[in-house]
Length: 363
Image (cartoon, rainbow, N blue to C red; front, side, top):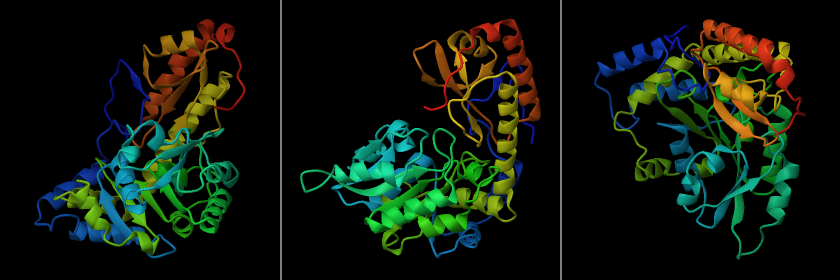
């Protein structure tokens, strides 16, 4: 799985900088040489949808869109009436990294502070209680991500509790699956697509961040949300004339489980990163068993590390330490992890022991 990397810097910034897995590029080449129906009605998209439905416990419609923000925007615009709102974690992607796309569609995002990026019935209930009557927006849809923006994941019990809670209160449950592949292949995970289809009204399966050139698969389980959904896709400018570009990739990802193989590789590389940090005694901001790792480092170390490693600065704590995000992907080579270990070890040996300030876990 090794891909060419910049020898001067180690890239652990994100899981979408590499293009696409060779098998997906081959699938695109084959589909490109054919005459395919447009707008997602091609044979590749149909087969990809069927392969996904085979893994579900309930019937569902499957639609292919280009990106995660687009998928969230189109889905929530279709699912909600004008006065209805979304309940989301304060760290949720729709609240922090989508430039107000949901609000631009006319729906307020009600954020809830969480210790680890996850919502629970106990955290949601006060938000519901605080919005009553026609003078306020009406909470209607609960938005969660799996994995979350903090790399944490939901257990089967947690998802079932959320599903039961939402059904009992007339709420929709929607799962952002940009990094669903990582969640489903993490060691100790007990959630699968079948369970998701029993608890969520809709969710999407991310391809962009797991080996695809682009593309997400939106799965709509709730029959009341399916009616004329393609009209909304078209109206929002999200219907690709060359829909086979996404369909062919998902066909290749799901025909023999490649989707899960690629995510497993990313998770294994991340676990090796955690081992390097653990050996150096570095605290983590949160227990994130997925392909996202959040070490807490002294500011001086962060500045030095940036000279050789690409990563995201996640949270400046104002106490001399910073949380950074290290992320692996389907294409992260073992050599990158080895290079990081050498680089980080050199920093640790020089002055890390004197500089590090232990932090308690939590965000």
